[in-house]
Image 1: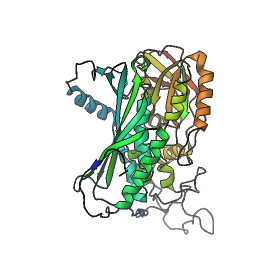
Image 2: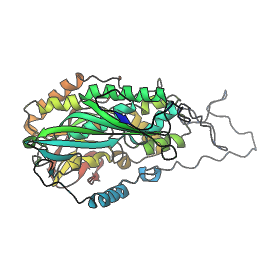
Image 3: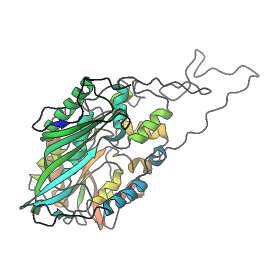
Length: 426
């Protein structure tokens, strides 16, 4: 792992190759089903789109209608997961009572806060999830560290905090020097983007428990107690501003991988059209999560009236009601989703509602500001976005930050043009 002021524990010994870590899947058409080209049509012949059956020959049966895929059917049921998390949280009864370290109650659950003098210490923990399986398939690991950092520091921003330090947890089946170096390079690049120090971490070798690897981290931040964004400033008439994502980020990959499997594609294949066919499917899907620290820090330093933030992760638009209770977040003009989402919806037959409750759909972060400050806030966000220092040129570049909606009295989130209502992710 990275040299840093802390140290990584775990097993030592000679490096070994992680089984199958660099093998690329070779997916072949299932028996009885025609080979498919990138358009999804049968292969062309010299006589036209497809060869006609000889006179009197039986006509081949058509493929059955494509099943509409959902996140739950792919293995992740958000409602069931939320119910289980509530059981876990309900079992955590103890809390420190002295002034230093006493918890500060926060809605939304983006981060945990404890008192530290006039300030609050902020802690977030998260991982990369099943996106690491695509990294394994490609044998490419220099982006997952960026994902790990982003998932944590972006959550810390939602309470108005400045991230300052980070530790990682890397669990592997077996050690491999090249793999570790790539993961470390991604973490180092992410630390610069987020302006945080990686102070330590832990590496665990767990053969028989972990297949391949898993990567998670924890971020430490701070915020003055009188600057905490706890939802109380949000009011009817506030303006919603959307900040673009760099594609899928780090959520919904169980469904993504299911769609790739159903389409019988390899991650080394060209991306199926949509203007991205100069890149492989794996390159587009492995695009790292955007880190919003420098952009949001500029907005918080601007003296504009900022009322709240949402990191749009798993659950999609259900993350917006986490900003504040007793308010309805109306998305009247959403950011345009990048082509990767168009392909996922078409290839998987995924309904629009399911797309917006699973993926960020082109909007990775949302700011809530006073209506009178909306134009200035958009200007600050656009200027600071162009000054970001991303390590990679985004393949899934989205729109510039802009106004996407408003706050009303009520509950939940409304995707207005589609007439779709969403509850809150707790």
